[in-house]
Image 1 (tube, one colour):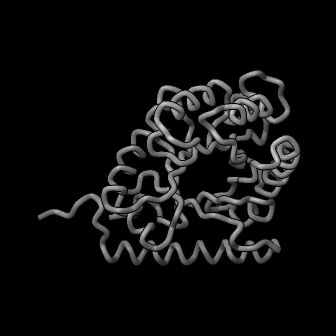
Image 2 (tube, helix red, strand yellow; image 1 turned 45 degrees about the vertical axis):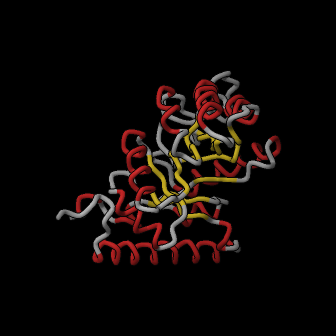
Image 3 (cartoon, helix red, strand yellow; image 1 turned 60 degrees about the vertical axis):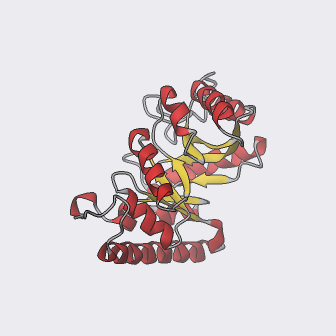
Length: 248
């Protein structure tokens, strides 16, 4: 008899427990260094390319939040994990096409990557039709302001991509709740520079949206610096789960 897709091997559970202990220690040390309470920072385990069994194992180890970046992978994985009794808070963190909105709102608790008014409208319509409570949304910010890459533009009056316009669209949507901002440090930027710039954007944003207190920033390589600059959520994949090619 073969194992089910959500069967957790003891050796893999031990690997995940060790990775989780290391990441939790890094977060605790970063909070202490920044003079912040450890409870202010949530770990989002990024499980893209990893099996549902890892989600089940992480949930059993106390991980409450899981991130995915492709709907084609996330939707069945969430269903498999739920069938095995694991119901973490699912974060969609990748670039999202509007035609995937109806699928994503059925399993995601948070969408972290809304960067246009058109995408906000698509999610609003899908959420209103499929959910009994609003979908939490983070507006993804373009730290370097490059319109060729993902992210709302903090210094632009663009009616579709400007940060102010996107935030207003989310805040005014019945099916959505504006929870805060998300950002990725641009390639080629030192994390200190990127997150210092982000902190400036956040300060201006919260003048208009003081209730939107979530800041998702920082990954395996730069989570300490993100926490120093105010991140409330860090998205960690490889430091927690290992490199995908090494898994058996």
